[in-house]
Length: 449
Image 1 (cartoon, rainbow, N blue to C red):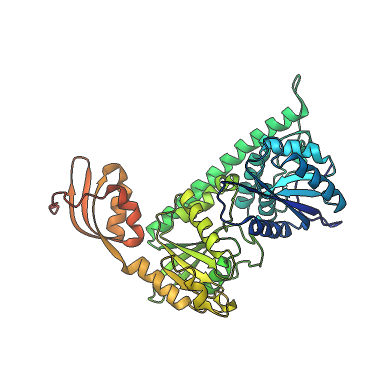
Image 2 (tube, rainbow, N blue to C red; image 1 turned 30 degrees about the vertical axis):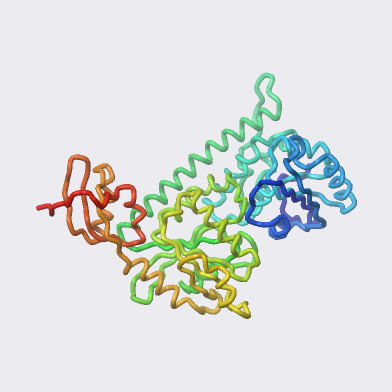
């Protein structure tokens, strides 16, 4: 039986036929053609050779096989002619879709979707214990509802690279009337619970680390962006470090933090996080919660965009949508249009994306434009203050401390429901106080003795 992972073996490189479906009335960031081109890059990153592409336009997905019955037969015949081992769907398949397609194609051809492919890439690239735990959890949560006889004995098959998804721990004895499928399902459910407990410990450790970091008053800038936009290269350039860099999707998964001195002498922390992609699997977003909280707790986001990419604007939209989904949409953001050293007309390319505010053309490779970018980050962090009038409930005492530590208190008064403060806070922190802003016609507060 073939292994559940998709990576290249020493004996031969697996071959894949890609299937893309354009469903009417479904909004997508990329065209079908561009999305399939991205899927081919994902396949290449996973070590899979793409031997063909099939597309179809549908008003609605087929409830049984996603694509139409005639297209199913076409894919089956073509896969046989091209000697494909895999059929990879660009659209996410439901468990029923996958089961029915596997029946149609037979045992010699496996069916996976974009989500499974991304999970396999993450499994290959996870290097740390934390990253491996996160990927393993995402893999099992994806596979559990899709478990069939063809997917059983995952204890000996799941995972790839550093994913460590093979740690279920043996089949054990079956109870009365239990099928192998039921045993595997029970084992995986138990393993998922264990992984969640372990990741909660990781999350608690990260929270304690962030609390210590906040007490040191060193601001944090989170690097965000579409995968392969150049975030790791930028971090290396700014911090003179050697974070792993490769011209491929999801080259680095584990968050990396480095100290950087800004032009005015202020020290900040830059954190490089996992790159985003359209249709980012929900299982990954959930599993990587501890890592993604590094973004939500940052003072400023630096959005790195590959300005040379033909779908740069769509990639920006995809990243911004993901930031909103994880609760980071209100954090101040600056945009760095990277790789201008590869453009004949950098100014012209940047002007095509002028609708995005606070943009700076740079080259992480040559260093061009970084001085202006760092100056802008310094202004955002240390020189830009906003006048606020807030009434903070007593149970939100950490916000009162945050105001005192980072802002300028002008008036303060303790009331029945909370502490009323008027003063100046850094623009980068305004979103933390917005829920407690007072109306403009609220009476004056008097200075506390």
